[in-house]
Image (cartoon, rainbow, N blue to C red):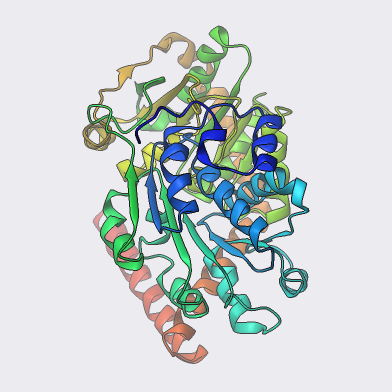
Length: 455
């Protein structure tokens, strides 16, 4: 763009939107906002790719609200996102900016009452923010709403949505949308999905990608470290990392990422037991409890959040000073999203990854992907020796408690539900699904017996 953009008034936004931005403390638009907002207002499809914390939500929310103001009706815009928490966050941002025009918004995600959601959709809200699975369920089960008049379709975290996991649901949703609409795609890591995105968008698509900071995929103000530790004392190293960090940083929230729901729950229980108050966030927790946990963390009542990748994308929590990878992700792209929960909007932050000798290849793959080398974070090995027994006892007690709950039963039900839905989509009967599952279980049992014989 020719002239340097110093404030939102140069983006041809309405005066009421400028007033809302000012009341929210937003002064200068970020590069993605400067480049994408005028193009969206001009009626173009848009692909926007920028690092986490760069203000992508406002890059589509502001022009959508301006266009809605010109021709207000519901359902005007549909925003799709891969995670429930991100859906609620986007809806909150729309509500905050759209307060002046009495904006009606609706969040359609799993884990909430479908009848209540159906009633909300029947009232034709202006903005619908949804996860693909639950919206596809509503399209299948009720005819009290229509998406035929939407003006905007937004895919937030587009690379994840188009990565293959949501193909069946997206096909159903796209079939319910009008041909004439503006399509907006936003993400922090777009490259692998770019061809797919350009195929879905119109010929007149505007593509904007943040200038590559000499090949660095994470923000400059993020201090990225690693701690090399043996696998069997990983939790003890985690405690010592938190203690060492807290000695120099009294305040600020900490996000800890791990790989599975079970590990997340066990780690949360273990840390709570040894005096590190925390909340957990994973797919096996009821949605209301997930929102309550996130609310406690966002309001700084609890300063440690332990989560799976459900919290890795898009969540904007300004107080996060440290992200810890308790388990390093297999995919470098997921590392970029996880560590993007800190050092947002120009602030500094730190990311520390616990690395076992088996993870060295993964570490090198991440360093290649982000274009920077991680440096070592020093912890006192002598301190770890003093806490190893306490932590292992606490973890064993947590495992016993978890055995006593219906956690594993819920997990099996959740797994079976997914299998049934997949089987029905493929045209199989319930009997056929059961036979296939029994064969798989038989193979697993056979494999385990062979391994036991070898050992």
